[in-house]
Length: 570
Ligand code: PEP
Ligand code: MG
Image (cartoon, rainbow, N blue to C red; front, side, top):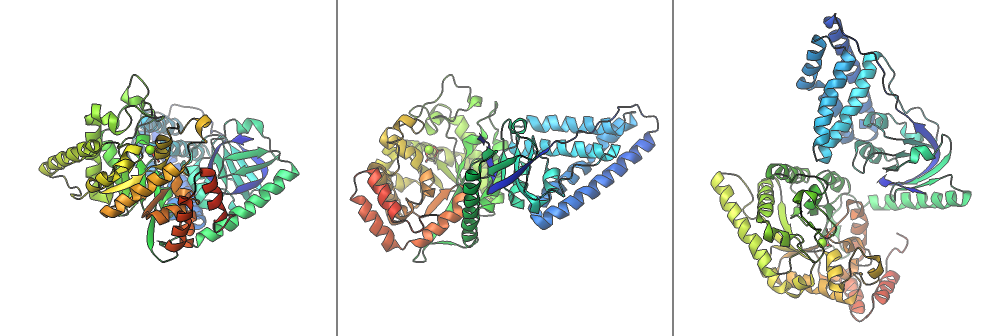
């Protein structure tokens, strides 16, 4: 079995069709008749635009306006006055149109690829597609069209360009597998919009499989089963059926408010790690962003993001969420999340200079980030969340800095939300123990159960040898959560949960009973959780929580809660 990244849900069962994009080949020539060459370029641009508009119309019909916009974006890129005039300049200097297009596109591609931002890098991939297609139009070579295809085709390729994906004959494609790509590359976005199961980043797959061979892919787990036997095929046919009936049921929860069985309103927000993820929140029907892990903006880059860069990212997320809450957590570096651009001599351990502790030594990093968040707060309901708080002075340190920054922005005439919320992550035992004090000074709590569990149990969350201890169902962890929620409620502040436990169905009645307002989960879990919450009255949740209060082991608690689930097969 090969494992890639699940990029579009569903099970694909079918036969392999290997797709190899033919690169256009041309002979580089010096041009004397530049007028004729410029005319050739204009004609190629026209036929490119026509073909792209046709593809975009097809995508518009099958997927929607947003996805069609990916292809229309190629036309905008091509018609960019700088781009066209640079190509024309080279032609006027005697370069043939094909080479001129290649050189100018390559120049933009290298600029875009160097930027440490997923969206900009995506632009580079779009330009690669555009370059190759425009040259094909110049030399009169046919573009790759993935239609018509035989029924049950699983399209496998090193990489599928947006135009190739858009041309797919949807009804006959059982799935897509690519060696390159990531969860948010355009091929993946289109596959999701076209509702085709897809696995990307499946390393080496095209050298293992052959045309016509049987293959299965699971677009959620990223599993690929090459040459499955009959038993496995049957098993996956069942999984496929279950997947689609589950999805149908969940669809009825889309667009409706999150209500418990008494009709009380709750909220399901989402956890994200990039601006691009905000689209997943909208697609997943999330009611806001409950945790934007900004350290992910920092992870694979060598330079620190500037205030402006951060501001643009936070503003983009706020704009995408159209007034719905966007909880931006300050950088939580350390504990496995290494940040090369900070140029630290040593790794930051879980008990070391992680998150807020780092700012104690490098306040300028926090200052830059808070200013960027404050500026972005003019564009939506932006809130600040500080992870790893274990002492009230840490909160006061951030509050004081925030007030100073507000003074600075006011004097510069920069608009921001004067009443921006400053919340804290409750994820250390110490924060839990003083949750009553913290609730008086924080604007909201967000319970980070991943860390709260590891620190409460003193069991490294990444160490499998102590995973038996690292369970949110341990009575000590449940008591901590319950107490923190009670302190928030007493003080009348909002309390959300943003750790993985938020999406655990066994936890739902307990959290509802404790009085939690808001859940923050992966966008793919929103509808499932909304459905789960709808089952419980407060009375029923309290009844289960009371029974759990009497239990002494996590095994007993889990077994009991599993036996009480509403829909055991969901
Ligand atoms: C947590 O600790 O529960 C949390 C949400 O933060 P992270 O997983 O990023 O530490
Ligand atoms: Mg944490």
